[in-house]
Length: 253
Image 1: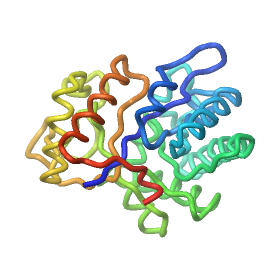
Image 2 (image 1 turned 120 degrees about the vertical axis):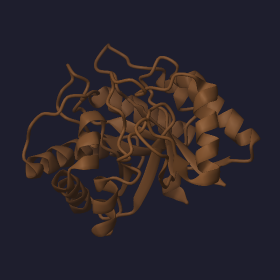
Image 3 (image 1 turned 30 degrees about the horizontal axis):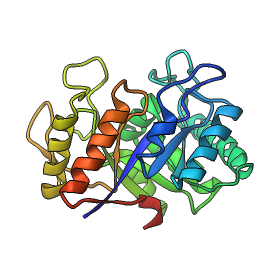
């Protein structure tokens, strides 16, 4: 059994840092690097990409709404085609910085409110998938399993990878429980590991509002901005490895 462990990194800005990227890059297989929308700047992108390359971690672009004050967790009303161009601009920026390392950006994963919107809105999902295809047909999409973005990416022929979340609760729609609501966050590593092992054996995920649902997964996400991110990532990797799970980057299989 193989799985990838990913995290959202490079989410600082200027002198302000978010999370322990250096340690996380020693634990994950893939890193979703912020592109200047919800967080980051050219120097932060460069430093994160360089460290990822040194650690042999596969990198992807992590575009979000242009909302640093809200950390990309608020929906900014925009037509789908404008969202596509916003994503293209951010992914292009990260790819240009990556050329300076050099390292190859291999996939795109929308952040926060943008990712949740693409999960439930077919038009937004299609706009993002088409923007990624127009940049480079070889770029993949990392999408929340079972959602509109996953379907849109597959429909237009992109390499499509599905992820589940170690530290987030699920709704019966396959979408994440909104932050601030009961059951949204999982902070206990043992609880997260138990749920993940059950999922990897059965393919079903418990939800807060109904019966467990069937999902697919190429990757497990641990949010890098969470206070216990390092401990959870290390615990997941160690405990799943002890159960015979092998970790490898999804984009290189």
